[in-house]
Structures are given as C-alpha cells and as structure tokens.
Image 1 (tube, helix red, strand yellow):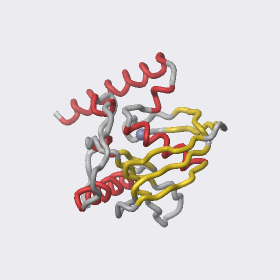
Image 2 (cartoon, rainbow, N blue to C red):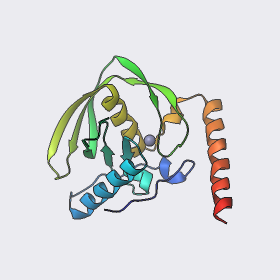
Image 3 (cartoon, protein in one colour):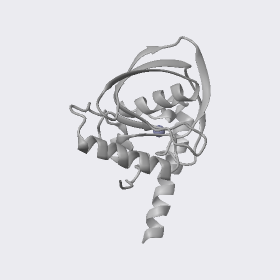
Image 4 (spheres, rainbow, N blue to C red):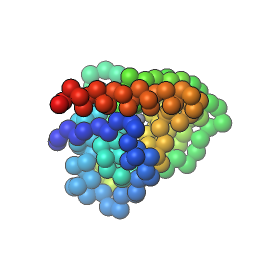
Length: 173
Ligand code: ZN
C-alpha cells in the first residue's frame, strides 16, 4: 500500500465525471488499498478516486468511530432509491480543507455496487453513512458540497483555498 496525494480545490479534475470500472482486478484493488490508507492517514471518513487524480467510479468509506476499522469499498456505485425525507449534516471534504457546512440531503438511500472482490452487492444506508455515500458519489459526477452553498459563500471559500495554495507553494520555495 502507498499513500497518494489528495487533490485540493480548485482543480479542474475535481469537476470531471469519473468512468466506470470494467473489471475488478488487482490494479483496482491496489487503488482501493492506496485510497483507504490515504483516507485513514488524512484522516477522513470518505474518499473518491478522483480526489487522488484517478477518474474512476471508485469510493472508500469508513464511518466507524472506534479503533476497529470497518472499511467499505464501493465500485461503480449506483443509487437506486432516495428517501423523500431529508436531513441536515455538517459536511467537510478532504479536497476542501478547513471548511464545513450544513448540507441537506435525502436521509436514506439504497445503493447497488461491486465490492472489493467484484461481487455485486446492495446496501441500505441512513444517517451519516447515507450522507457520506451521497457526498462521495457527487465527487464521481464532478460535484462538491460547496456547490450547494450560495454563490457568494462558495466564491469566498474558493478564493481562500487559492490563497492557501499560493502560500504552500511559497513555503516550498
Ligand atoms: Zn469530499
């Protein structure tokens, strides 16, 4: 396993649509292993492949709060049901460090996906897991949580991220 670099907004790749995986092989599993390591190290509770620069429909999630890890690997995830009931969670994103916002989404969703071994699976998610799945699937379609905010708020966050990126570059030089 090796850690990969997380791409920070603004970056045009984060706005691209990811492509489905055709075959779950050792290369895909290597990507999943790298992604989960990168996510744990960050630390975060969800990561989409596009966030490490790979435009494939692959997500890793672990919402377990205790020491015991409980990773969820989602390949080609497809939401087949969204509840009419909505709920609000405070969301953050590894590609938007330092910013959090309350986002409203369907409180429950059902999902079809391929697991780590390429086996077809279904899951019914609610609460934090449902929010996390929807946030990560948004990534696969080029959407970030700040897109749900007002233009003013979103522009302000992006402006600060640009400034932050410039400062990092400066300190490397
Ligand atoms: Zn995110």
